[in-house]
Image (cartoon, rainbow, N blue to C red; front, top):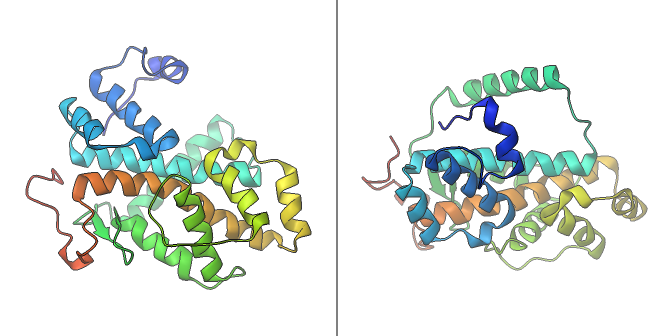
Length: 246
């Protein structure tokens, strides 16, 4: 996967467009930004330009995975006010997460790495399975409401979802969670508490909201990479010979 020298990290964070990096890395950063801030603008023209810069489909998938992980967990962190870890804690957490990833996946990517969900949308195989578990498992919040929360968040990024409706107090929370989670303030949480939602329910509301916000970009990218024919079934979702999944 693409690497980045520690010496240019500050320059990249300041402005990736002008930082001294090669075209492939700059293209990767371009996709990361689009998936984070403008997923609805990811189109075939962008994919063609990323390929022209030398990025394979497999690398685009890896970049998308990084984008999803941070776009998901950062929203949760902002919503529940996680404390920033120090450098040693960050390094340790990274090692644990890497180990966990290898244990869960066996160190191998699923083949094919994507599938078509029950709703006809193309997603990474692991994310589709995670989504089904998140939205169907029993919990303090009814699965139907969790589905509606996920749909509300995804739809804010123009992702295709069936019609849905959530209580106004939840909509007031899910919208900033999706579009600018760093702006979530105590009053929004207090409104939910006043409406009768427990701390556990608040967490179960936040998870599908953060997931829907993060997965919208994945769906848009994977639709462009592997097609989005709603009449196809997951059993027919084998990648084409030139999909670069090697």
